[in-house]
Image 1 (tube, one colour):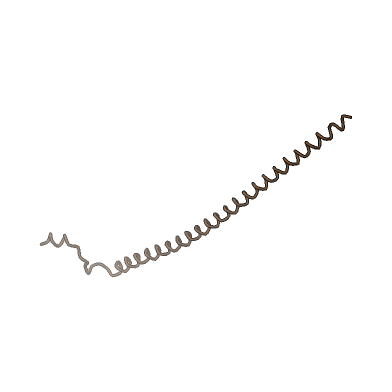
Image 2 (cartoon, rainbow, N blue to C red; image 1 turned 60 degrees about the horizontal axis):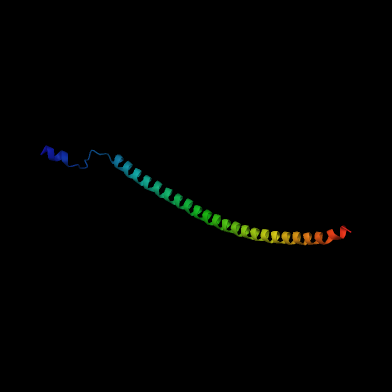
Length: 100
């Protein structure tokens, strides 16, 4: 029968109430700390999501401006080629006149 008593664990009156209270307080504190960490993590995640959305909007705006700049550059190139063609025509027209 002594072996049966050793196999089964049971709470004894010798366990102080202070230890039981300390264990309960510690468990409550750990749960409270975990809940605070969860709420802080949620705040950080929402801030990260807002920052990511803002960065994507800015990137899209930059891409749009880059496309506009590319189109403007192409138009400037066309105008420069047209001016160069006009200048070559003027030079070719003036060159025979100079030869006289």
